[in-house]
Amino acid sequence: MADDLFKALADPTRRTILDELVEKSGQTLFEICSRLSMKHQLGISRQAVSQHLAVLEAAGLVETRREGRCKFHDLNTAPLRHITERWLDRGAPGPEESTP
Image (cartoon, rainbow, N blue to C red; front, top):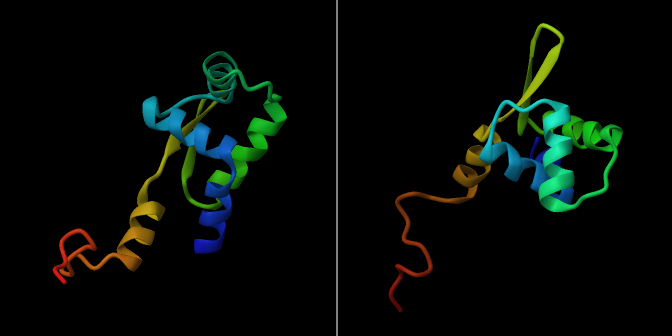
């Protein structure tokens, strides 16, 4: 599961899509494509965005739901929390808190 997560996060376009979903969750493919084009000047096809969303969904970072004919994409931060909890011990002092 971690491999899929890191693969998904490795691509800058996918990170931009996640940024957009943080700003406004529950977007359709059309909305995401529009925001990428207008806000980020990314000339990317709907099919390419759809493929990026599929990778994000496989990694658990995006969840989809259907309402009628529309498919909405929502951010899921649980996989990110799982990774941070894996390596960060809440009781141990961080590098900035430790004393020599």
